[in-house]
Length: 298
Image 1 (cartoon, rainbow, N blue to C red):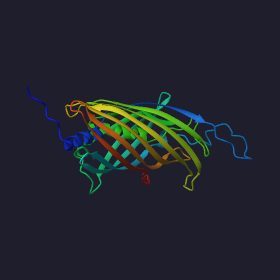
Image 2 (image 1 turned 90 degrees about the vertical axis):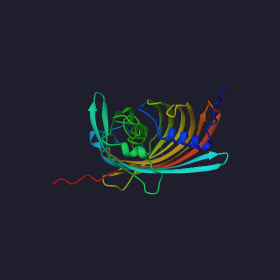
Image 3 (image 1 turned 180 degrees about the vertical axis):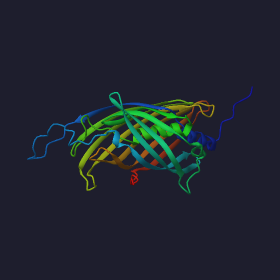
Image 4 (image 1 turned 45 degrees about the vertical axis):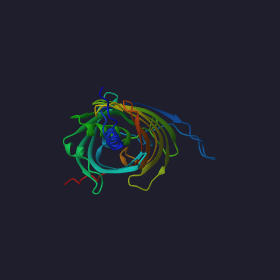
């Protein structure tokens, strides 16, 4: 009787890398709970929310953006560690339109560049006229995200865009001194991949910055949990993970998402039940989003 050979760990690293780089269409639901903010001694009671004082998203919140991400992935093997570094910048144009009681949000890929000196990613070369669409309310939190035409890396980016852009705010908008929590589950189900990310976030809004127009600074700390599987290589690859995410973002007085930067750490375990082998990995990611200057009209 023929026996099945055990794949070397180098192949399992390749399998794990594929699992990190492949995902599919993203859908998500979010619920934002506003936590009471302790009053400062001698301060007046908190006033009711008003559109004039709150920072909210609206159709004019769209625009052109650059999104840079640098990932360092360490695969931990019995024979030692292997490290891969991936870097890229995505340029996007975002449009927001009213749609029933929500907003329809469309992301259009303008171009994508890989960082020199980082691990080459052939999948990025296949991205051309890609569009992502989703929905959100005036308080943000993207959901029902779709990508067209579908491609493994385009679908992978859908999960990132849903998390990184237009972070959720309290009902009624956000003001300096407020604190709130955001609970989200982002489910991925598509081409040979099934994955579920649970995100629990706590955010704090600080005083107005010196930007023109004035902007509000939002600090967010998130706890991440992931569970999923992939059959892209022809074998079932299980994935379990947990992580932490720390983000600083800015929204101006007009409700425009100006910029965001932060880092994320993820401890992941990939397993191949058929052969009884596992690969542990730690992914460290740094990211930065910038709203680009609008061209001046003649």
